[in-house]
Length: 170
Image: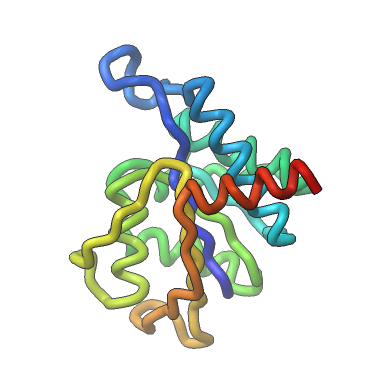
C-alpha cells in the first residue's frame, strides 16, 4: 500500500474566521492545482482520497480529485483533522487495507508527525512539510500497527508545481 500525504494549500489567516471554516486563498487554490497537475503528470491515481473535514483541507482534496479525474467521492476522515491520533488513523486505514494508493489530505504538524511515526515509530523526526507539499511512502505487508514504512519519495511544492507546469504545456 502506498500512502500519499498531501498538506492543504495556503489558507486564509488565522483569526479571520473560525479555524474550521478557513478557506484556501486564491494563491492557495492556484498552487494546489499546479501540484495536482504534477500528480497527474506522474500518472497518479488513487483508490481512495481521505480528507480532514476542515474546509481548507477539503478544498485541497476537491482540487486534487478534479484534476486527477478521481471517480469516487472524497471520504471525510475526522481522524485527519488537527491533532491526529495515529492509533485511530490506523483503524481507519485498516478499512482500506486492500487499496494500493491512498491520498491523505491534512494539516501540520500532523502530516510531519504521521510521516515520522510511519517511518521511525515515533513522531519526533524533524520533517519540513510545506503547504501543498506531499510525500509518498509504502507500508509493508504486515504494517499494522507497528511495522515501519519505507519512504519512497518526496517533492517540495515547487518541484510538484514545476511538474504541473510541464503537464500544462505538454
